[in-house]
Image 1: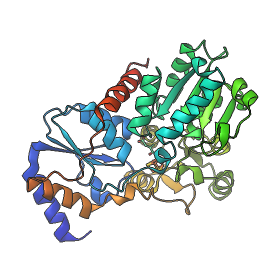
Image 2: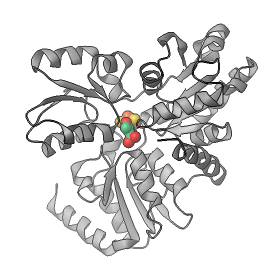
Image 3: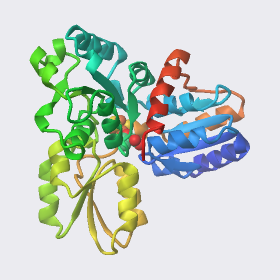
Image 4: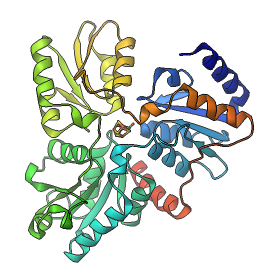
Length: 357
Ligand code: CIZ
Ligand code: SF4
């Protein structure tokens, strides 16, 4: 990147000192990661933010829902800054609170809301997390989705009972976890499409379902295909195919390993030198992992899938602008969650933190 800009970034970072803490998500650009005090997935970063009560400013290099979680988990005196407000998440945007309220009303009208518990993926707005907290549910991440789903079923009579989970907003993580980890049949999962009356489902389908999956997906991970897995196996002998659970069910089934971002990093750290890997996740992360493991043969599962475009909105110019503004005494792009939502979202986040394991 531009050497002048790097110099300005260094100067602004030094001027802020301990007043600021810079968090960098694994999917961020290298030019941004270079200035991160800590890197991680959304869960680790939320915990890191909460563990820095002395920092006046939390500069969150990631997407909007992550900055919201940081605001919820930090004190009121701390200010969370998202260097570009356009850094949203298309998956989180697929579940708007008015749609979720309407879906819940459908379940209430059918008399099944009382047997249903909401579970929301970390990748959702604070309003959806608050909805989940108000209805006794939990947040989950891709690392603890199995434990979260088991806990949720336990609240409504167990995995083998008749209670239901409403899983938002990623249908793939929900389905992969329910079927591959909890052993529920694929037919026990239905997809609720918020754009259609009754979610596009019959009353009987809703009554019989065990897992009601919200119709959401990740615009990056949702693009990997089974053909990609076949192609890489044909091209690279003995390749280990490693994908994120936001990938489609058939892709995860065809792969050798499935796991969260932190799992993917650990797998590569522990891999035999000279082994071959094809990784199905965001490209900034895969390139970084490949660079850090020159002794391994790291491939990208599909070269036409690439960056998360909203993650990439945070670039060095935006980070420099945010830091220089703070140095000048102007707090820009502050993320503040409505206090009532923050309270109930925190209930759902605390429930997640209290899960076993
Ligand atoms: O796909 C994402 O955005 C992920 C995996 C986020 C996170 O860190 O949990
Ligand atoms: Fe959202 Fe997918 Fe981008 Fe993650 S990678 S921020 S889930 S669109």
